[in-house]
Length: 367
View 1 (cartoon, helix red, strand yellow):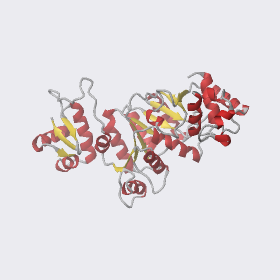
View 2 (tube, helix red, strand yellow; view 1 turned 120 degrees about the vertical axis):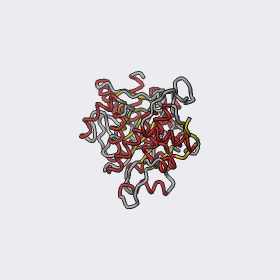
View 3 (spheres, helix red, strand yellow; view 1 turned 45 degrees about the horizontal axis):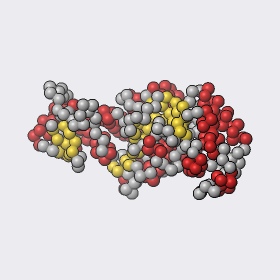
View 4 (cartoon, one colour; view 1 turned 90 degrees about the horizontal axis):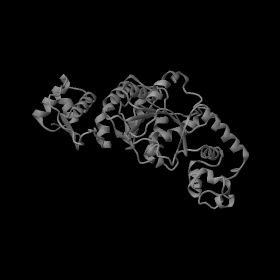
């Protein structure tokens, strides 16, 4: 994207009454952000849903000066700019009417892999939530998804660190400019995240991590992902806002259930009870509901490999399925005396080895 167009986009962002929805209308009408500032004001005022009020001050020089100053910061710090009409803009986010017109990025983000999921939750993650988060990401790692979160305390950073650990790409969506990091304690994780993904933000270098910015940031987390997972949440919290936004975008939402008296399970239990989220007890739930399948470079059909090596747990499950035939995940867990999350992870590894295959209805069979 050329310098002139970036500055024009920044000018639009800087006008107080022009939000992302209005900016997209202007760009659509004129053909580009730069063309907006070449158009006559009276023509722009006639665009449906725009009017005089939103265009007030559009051509004021203060917006151009601010845009030029921010562009110098962008250029000096080698920050990437991703325009909503470009191919490298997050695909799912393009379909959100209130999605940002431009994102600033840092790192090595590669969105060619379209399996994107957001993982959010309380900043006061419990040992239960931490264990589930780590086991869950370990289980889905063979499918190579991108893990999106907010780089905050608790569930966010747990998910992103687990993604890095398992070699997955992870994206942190920030509520401030790229000249700082919040919370400051997470500065030590920035290099790892940038090597394995990076950061997105719609905020300028002049923006601080204020409350309203976090609420705006949440729509990006929900919007750029195929599904949003809430691992732990109190009765109220930002992760529930993210879940509501994901629902408004008609995206899948999953919540991890917990004991009824646990403070940080109330939010998840309510999401499930109110049918705002599907229950998530293992990686298999997500894989089945999203229709994910392991990819085989030679064939779309997972074929049994000769002389494949199985560990003791895999041998146990394989022998059981050979004897019993098609079985449900929960039944396998019960009969093999293994926790569901362990069975789910083991079955995924076995599917990669070509010795089992998943079937509709959460059934599995030996090949």
